[in-house]
Image 1: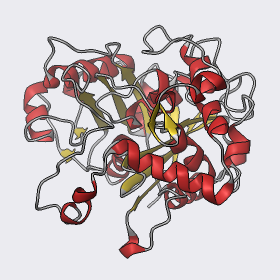
Image 2: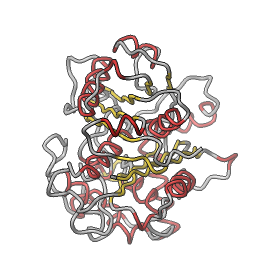
Image 3: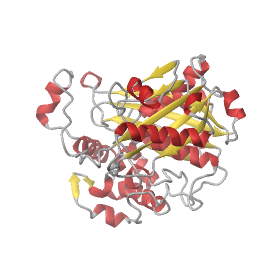
Length: 389
């Protein structure tokens, strides 16, 4: 069952706050939902499908449907970490195609910054019942050192350098300077990145994403609904999803789940990486971007360092503009889950609503991709391809 042309993104909203003191988690979810619905020209009473993940409080979709007063006939709380929201857009399109709903709401919200969460440097305790915990927890895995291992292995296998990784942060900072909501708005150089404090060798502080509160929401609708709304038509062309895990001990840290989710999305969309005008790529760390660009087919495996260098990701300068809002590296990584903002900025680009300084000319085909979990252990990957029609 293809989703190509079977659903459209009609609404998108990113919460402007980066530190949500005095707001509850449920309130943030409701505020982003309201923003996306207003963007689409709809109300909560129009929503008949709701999608959320583990960031939603209480009983997730049940609690939030009650809190927001939604009258639903379809509910999905699939959880793949930060990639969940790209997954949800694809699932919403499938549900619309199957006649299970016509107007789907997807929300994300979180408060790690206000709550003082040590996102990347403190072990996450998932509970003794999780099958991987007894084997891995004694070694002290944290997010930063898991991604650092991927970077170190990629350097060993392919000769990738810290300077090449730094170009990814440089590109993000060039874009973030035009985003008044971005947490880090100063343009940085390669030297700034490699001279910043080492967090987990070989990743420096400026190789790491920000920690922020806030959230975002999307509205996915049936084609007939999209045509009735006075909004740009952003068609879903393809979607792919895939997990990557320890593979029974056959561990290769140099690739991600994008090697499977990407080709699935491209085949469904009937396009190739060369056709993409803009790419939103999950940027929890600089190494995340480099590996995903390779796995999505924008360059060959091992050529990512060369591909991202010399401003090749900067809008107006490079071959492949990426994360023109500043991404997770500079703008926003709400709830430690960056997939939602990747779709939102892709929608802005396709609508021609990005900041004029970073807007990609004639942007009619965009890709958004996310990972959720840990690149160094297990994660979910999800890819979306969208078109302005």
